[in-house]
Image (cartoon, rainbow, N blue to C red; front, side, top):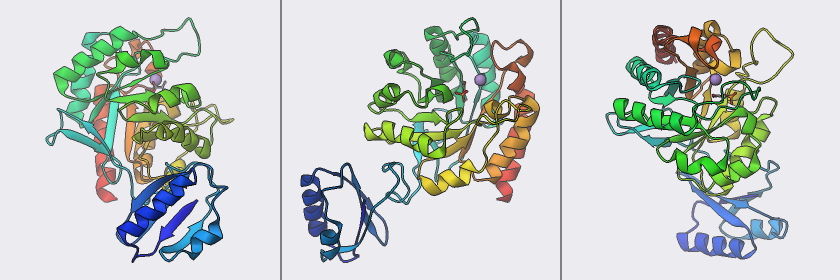
Length: 339
Ligand code: PEP
Ligand code: MN
């Protein structure tokens, strides 16, 4: 339920109303805009008498919200959320994403060696990426496939971070690994874990942004409900990632749902980035899809880059060489310039 306050409501009146609402057992999310103040009521609102609320002097309007995602809902929070990540590679010491700030996260599917991750980190930084990705715990379909370097992979990412200053992004699969992620700047939840609700709840108590990827066969509403699990725990720094969904089409690994970008921007205030690598599965499709994502309003991109894709232990076919990545960054920059 949302309550829109009249412009002339005083702070004291507002606080009294909030206190009363909280006494009814709901939590109140206050959004003070330039012209309007909105109270978002989260929890069981069934005891709240809408008609009585509407009659209060300071209340302009009361609406029931049918969507069950509240904290991520743009109706409660009209302004875009901007996520800030400390960055030694950035002149002002911070990388921002969302609300007009565009950011590219690039790096290999998996961390494979110090030489590999440091070399890729230097190249993607030189090309203009603002964060380094690298999988240490890998969710593989086959238990016999390379599972990632695990804790050692995270240590190698930290070395690449020290060498380049780039903040690091890596995927978590189990909340028991959280202490290993201390130096990780953004914790990724992969498509396969989008509805691992216990993991999401644990990440709600973490003081780091979470990059939440859309599940293989999940709707946008389900994606936002998963974001809601994290936000309900107190961590409101969630970045959403469209990474393609399963369809009947097999020419590409997945089908990139570009319409998810404007749709999510309408539904939520959270930043939306696009992963053209996992959504196509093909290095030669990454550039057109990256440019398309920018044209559709993405707040950033996540792209796989490997120093030697032919020998990659995971996802070589969709990984760009550093030279190809230079070209993609050039075209993405040109696309952004014309928008
Ligand atoms: C990844 O980004 O390394 C990954 C496994 O992606 P997804 O979860 O989108 O398949
Ligand atoms: Mn991958």
